[in-house]
Image (cartoon, rainbow, N blue to C red; front, side, top):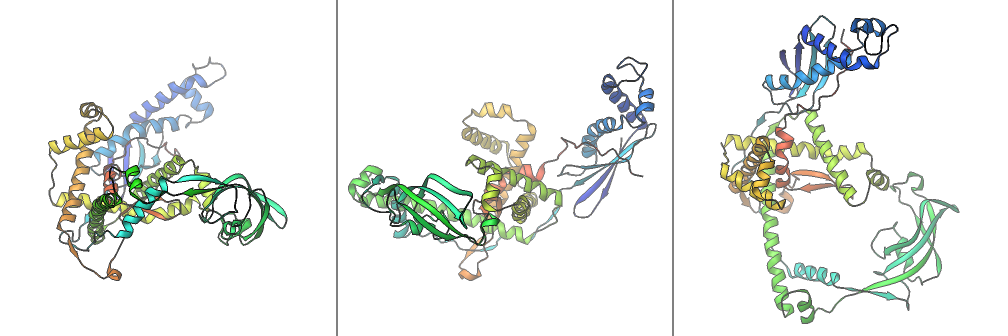
Length: 484
């Protein structure tokens, strides 16, 4: 086997791989043996016709595709190892020469792991993140607990008020014609939630159970259903049920019901303490994000396009799994939001690039600083993983191989690099308008179509898979049309 490597622009490379004529003839014979039982030739029993006879009847290339795929699937992984490059994408295969009696030659265009030119990453100045707890923060936490301990009361002696939850039958009409998706029965609606078209919920205030009423609205110009944008509509509505929340009194009895404390004062002190701990941890994560963000922005990396596309696919799959776990299909999401797959992935692109760059930069810092991870640290991480999976550490260790263990070591290295950057950073007081706040990495798109921020730690968890992966499995079937 011969392998030639041609470096292309943007960290791409073309591998030219040559198999001997004998190798290709053997592959043709293998394809013939696999297919001959399915081919009928006059004068021969099924499966007994010679290969040359079948090729004469059906064409010289009748077995070329199967033979080519067999050679490629066998030779590409070995060529990827032999070329000495770190490949981070699936290959794009093209046939250069395919002819019986001659060497079989094909090319594989692949993305290579890019080099990182580090900028400053130690002693970086970042904006100080204050840790402050106000009484309003404490009040808000207590109000959440109060809401969770509220009682739902059926109302039958007054009209609908703001904040009530109702059961509603409705049907919408445009120019007197009912439109698709405009009808609901026993629909639960909290007045003031903003769940419906602007102006809809407000008109239900004052409605009485069982009384039919009309609600007049105009669909927004950016409404997801194109045919309804800007249209005036009338909804025939009937309120069938009214309920309201009854909140408990904020007294010592409440404190005793929801906590281990006897008085509201003790309960407030405990909430204040927990909020302070939470805010302290959030400030620590924010400090890490700002420091790593600045180190990443100081570095230069030319990320190959296939690497970005692979990251976008992973993010898309994660997003689809997340919305499906909430009972929403991708088609429903697209219909509800007016989003398209192209728009969704276009929103993900800059964050996919940033996530890849973050991982690469942290890995480069680990290398520059000669960060080593001991076997004991790897063992401790395996014990931590086992605990999160509710497994015995020995059982988990048995189930993972050398590659997975090395991935754990690499992930610990880049986490240590992030710690180094963060620990050396200098917090300074900055005017709010001078602060540069950017997201480090993204895991998908939120239900409101906005890109969702994730922490540096989230980016690190996937670092080994996204950056170090050398893909040699699942080689796509070759295009067996030979180039002229």
